[in-house]
Image 1 (cartoon, rainbow, N blue to C red):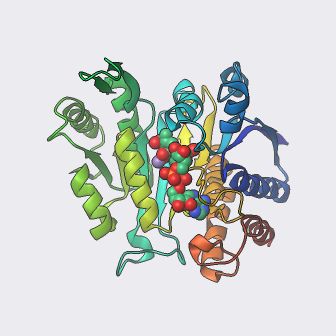
Image 2: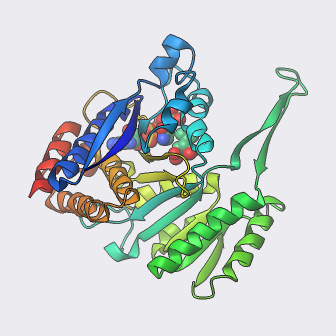
Length: 354
Ligand code: NAD
Ligand code: IPM
Ligand code: MN
């Protein structure tokens, strides 16, 4: 029996509500399988912790997390704490410290999921975003000069290293090769005349090593238009940190909404724990009301199972999400249902048992 040690950071807002259902499903999969188990250790970090202790996580939080096989995160952010503090001192510091430089975000329209686009079939929206997750526009490099003076200046630098660009682009090529898919790079070399010209150059260099992979490249403005007008153009997509952030919320909008959008923050070398989370935020507008859709978190649990080598359970969970979407018997209001968060998790675990 193998035991996967998971650090759970439920976080703020709807985070604890959706994480409870993700844990429920992971435990059910382990119970049904019988060859693996989970040990969940809960850390009460987040905005309430900040309001009590003046920090988002314990002082030795990162050392503590280092001992786990994975991190399962709900959401971070509360109107009582400035977002740049809460996110930088918890979510972003974890991604960077553990070199989780790959952010894998499926954008797949499952059967039964609502889609605001006209005339699209399930197979027309079937993408995997490979978002750069360690540097770029999120490098945190800059300055705030002459604060509150008339000549005030702020500088926010984008940092694109050869190593950082190469490794994420190479990862995307390997994925495209393995899955026999096309690979699309999304950048903005016409305006960002250093960073994105460099990105495009590295994409071409790495492409030369993968003659078997069909490639495409779009400017980010056109890409966002085509994601709406002709989403079947995109299969595997590789892009920078900020573009990947924005385009995957757009991806969520065309494939069932924020309540279905999952993400894995991977350290592919497995030198450090990887982190699995829904891509949505803490949704303060619906927090504490049982309205949150837990399916995005459950999908990220499927990504965790895949990362641990339990591919069949990962596939089963995604198939069960699809079954629930088709049956429409137990869904939260964002998907047109009346079920509470916990009822969706219970129904899910029951379906998985069958
Ligand atoms: P959000 O994703 O929290 O919410 C956007 C909209 O989607 C809201 O109307 C919300 O009710 C809805 N929504 C989100 N998840 C849902 C779910 N599971 N079920 C049903 N509806 C859902 O984005 P926001 O409002 O821009 O941000 C709120 C806070 O979350 C901010 O503090 C922000 O910084 C933070 N945030 C955190 C993360 C994270 O922890 N990974 C991600 C994004 C935003
Ligand atoms: C996401 C979130 C984060 C990001 C924020 C909360 C820092 O929007 O995971 O998509 O921009 O990466
Ligand atoms: Mn985002």
